[in-house]
Length: 249
Ligand SMILES: Nc1nc2c(c(=O)[nH]1)N[C@H]1C(S)=C(S)[C@@H](COP(=O)(O)O)O[C@H]1N2
Ligand SMILES: [Mo]
Picture (tube, rainbow, N blue to C red):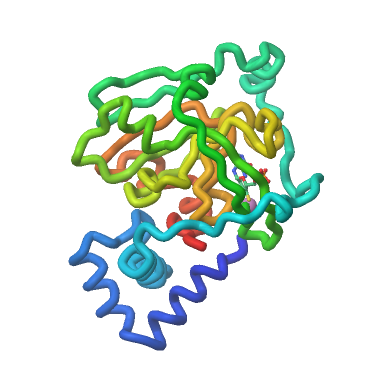
């Protein structure tokens, strides 16, 4: 598994600047330690995350004009092969549900029609894969923040975990990204229904982070104050595979 550029940059900056120990201490004091901030890459991850969260908190991912939308076919966009998915697909996703639970007042199952009844927002943003390719598309959907508000998210919540019908694909974001106006539960792309290859009928879009955080085929959200009891406790499947939990761009 290739190390992400971000990881190496994080470690390099830490070594050359204030010093790893000092940065980690500060980050810990201000609650800026990411869930995977342990082990050999820990200090680098922590510095990157802490720097982004203190310096560019709330900043927006760049949005592009319509002319910048890339021409298909894009590099990835492969439809899933899982039986459970194919069943939904042949039924036109009529019974697709997004269940939202955890630290919320009203755990709810949303149909696609329910999600489409929230205010619709669009953004033309870049999806950048850690492998080096990228494309620009228009993404439309409901703001994650609107859905979290509807279910009555607890004030103590710190993370939103999200799960795909593909069991290996799950991830999480902190509240800065969960409540960010560009973080979408996306159901349309380039003016049409989100294609199966790109996560249809529903995908997360977190345009302020690398592509792997934009998990496709979403079925479940869990609001929590700790990611420790999920998987290996690092906040995402990607983190368990050696990628950074936080990978801001
Ligand atoms: N469920 C699921 N989500 C996923 C993936 C996947 O294979 N399955 N690939 C991730 C990666 S590594 C990237 S770069 C983007 C690719 O998005 P695209 O298929 O729309 O190009 O989706 C992310 N979300
Ligand atoms: Mo990727």
